[in-house]
Image 1 (cartoon, rainbow, N blue to C red):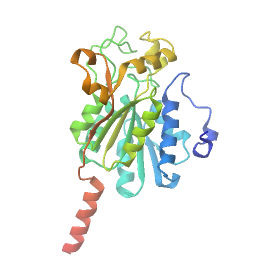
Image 2 (cartoon, rainbow, N blue to C red; image 1 turned 60 degrees about the vertical axis):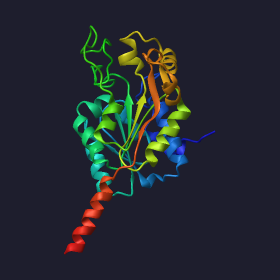
Image 3 (cartoon, rainbow, N blue to C red; image 1 turned 45 degrees about the vertical axis):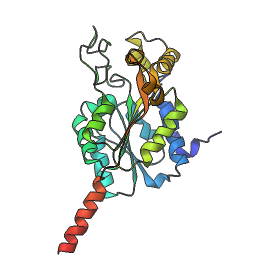
Image 4 (cartoon, rainbow, N blue to C red; image 1 turned 120 degrees about the vertical axis):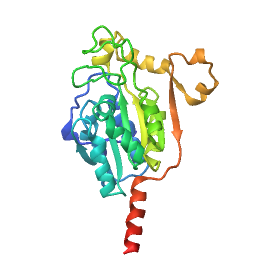
Length: 271
């Protein structure tokens, strides 16, 4: 049995997440992944913005920064630039990262700075009022779309790939063992790594859209997600309504802090 107590801040409990929320599942998978990689707490920094997902670092006994709405990647960029040897992990949500923080998201991926981003996608602004987020599905109801959203949703994994990320993957809170492996791969990859994590909100999203109780949400994840291996063998008709999970993109690209160090070395040599 894995012992989580050495890795958490007990004084910060009980947590604020609703019953049935998947964020606690991600927290446990993240702890197991970092333990499995042998990352010491002094070698890791977790950075978050605002939202349900962004409360995660408050429960983990490592170096943490709880920053302002949408600015987690800006703070994380500063941390990594100042201390390139640290393992910098950003925990954020679909609204925090791709709405108010959208510009930071695009440019951190473009720079390919060595940061791991765990982006919890719950299709809505869960903590801050149940508003439409960039990933709210067309037709879904929210506090700002009581008759259903008319906007097409962002493909946040596709956006990271297009902007220049080295590693892009998608996991979910139903397939927990697979999620833990994807977190490890994202942390180990040099460059900007994005792991989109499907973690449906049973309160702000599930209730409004009559998705059922939390167990039914987990069953929806089970039935909706498809591994990359299965996806490649499916017809377009079979893919309809399904969500690919696994490693979506994995390439080698120059990393920002390495390139900056080369520039400094060259300038010193020219003096």
